[in-house]
Structures are given as structure tokens and as C-alpha cells.
Amino acid sequence: MKNDGFTLFEVITVLSLIGIVLAICVPKINADFGYMDKTAEELLSDVRFIQMESMKNPSSIYKLTVNSLAGKYYLMNGLNVVKTVNLKERYGISYTGEGPLYFNNEGIPIHAGTFTILDGKTKKSKSVTVVPTTGRTVILE
Image (cartoon, rainbow, N blue to C red; front, side):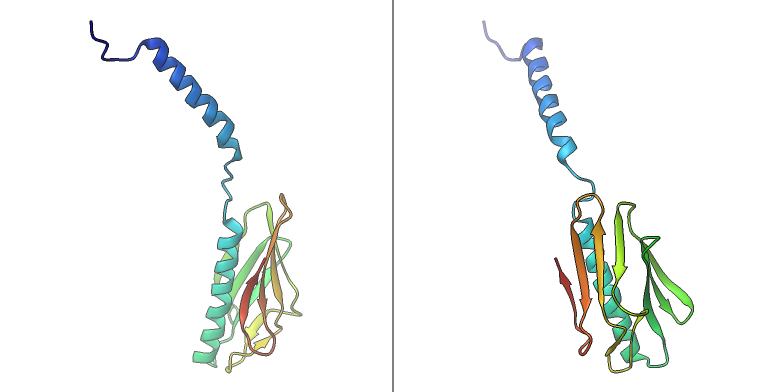
């Protein structure tokens, strides 16, 4: 007699073990994995965008403003909001500059400072720093 299949008991046992392993692993997978990295890269890209636009078109007044209480920042051209970035609820953003960040026509920042994105749950942070004299923008952990 030849056995070509699995018994019902074997199938149920294997599926139960897979279910137990998934029940242990799934809660540890975080849906926000890489969110701070992505947000910091987007902020860096927005800062470089306003710098390039200010150098290409000196008559435009691109600036980046932060609303720390609401957890968002705005990319503006004059008084027009070009882009709004809302951070997820557990994240906050702050800025050390004395006003909105903008650049002159040579790419030198006015009100240069550091943007900090803080995860309220894990207390980890990422910083995007705009160097005052050169306008170079870097991400710090």
C-alpha cells in the first residue's frame, strides 16, 4: 500500500504551528518602519528645491515654514502654499531658525537652522541641517 498524501492531523498541526509563529511575529512588525527616513529625505529634497528655485528665478520667493503644534510644514511661493506635508500623529517637527527658511539668489540661506523630526513613541529623532554660510543641507541621526 502506498501513501501519497498527508493526513488531516498532519495538515492541522502544520497550519497551527504556522499560525502560532505568525501570531508571535506580526505584532513586532512596525507599519512606520522607515517613516522618519522617508520624511527626512522629503524635507531635504524640499529644501534643495527652494534653494534651486531661488537661484534660477530671483524674483520668486520660495520659503519653507514649520507649524510645530500641528506637526506639519509648508512649502510656499510668496503667500501661495505650493505643498503641505502633514506628519503622522506620533511624529513632531521643530525648527531652530528665527523665521521661515528661504534663500537669496546666490543660494545662501536666510534664517538657516536645523529641522528635527521626533518620534514621540520611541523618542528617536532625525535632523536636517542647513549650513548658514554655504546652504549645504545634510541629514543627521
